[in-house]
Each structure stands twice: as structure tokens, then as C-alpha cells.
Image 1 (cartoon, rainbow, N blue to C red):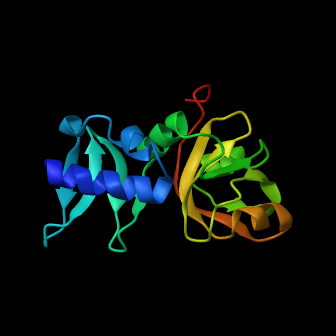
Image 2: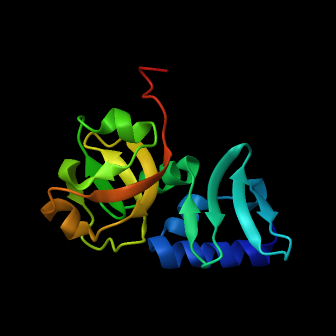
Length: 160
């Protein structure tokens, strides 16, 4: 990755996820690989075999599980967090959507279309995806989809 690319990606991360997200996602740009579209625009950012994120045509990132783990470890809770309980955990882990009736907490600043981390009440990352409702509405609604899950984190460590 070039310094110019690294600077662009760092600015987008800070804009989209807030201060500190650039350091969380890209602690060392020398270790990262960037794939490009046919026009030369950055497409995916990889750390070895792990996909951190994809740079969308809309200029925003979509997270991979590895990128979600990095953000979870470094961002202040509850930024970009949607918290669900044990009842929906196994389904969300395998990549199924998170429904509003199971949401226990959500960042009040989440807007529909935002990239979010779906987290278990104990703090484990379950999935990454796109918010379908504003954060406060996720808590108010009894029905409907709260998060369209893009990638589930897979089985819990004790199940693997």
C-alpha cells in the first residue's frame, strides 16, 4: 500500500468510525495488502488472509470480521455497537440477521445504512453488518430487522 493510499483509507476510517479508527484498522500499513478495481481504485484491504474491509463505490467501508475485531478492541464502547443476548447469539454468529426484539443496547448515534458491530452482551463480536434502523429505534421496535448481517463471526471458541 502506498502512503497516499494509506492516508486516504485512514481519513475514510476516521470519518466513518470516528477518531482512533484509523489506528485500529491500519496500525502498520506496511503489513497490509490492497487489491484494486480495474480503474485503480482501492477495493479490499487484507492483512494476510484476513479481509479487514472493502472500500465501496460509495466511498465508505464495509467491514470484514477481522476489521470488526480490530474496531471492537480499540473503539470506546458503545460506538457502532448493537448488543444482543444469548437467545439470538448462535443465529447471528452464523450470519443470520439481528432482529430488533433481541437488541439489548445500541449506540444512539447509529443511522440506517451505517456499518455496525453486532456484539454479545458479554462483549464478544458476533457479526458485522449494516444497520436497518436508527440506534434508538432498535430498542423501541418489537418487530423488524435491526441489522442486516454481512459476515458472522462463526462458532464460539468453545464450540470450535
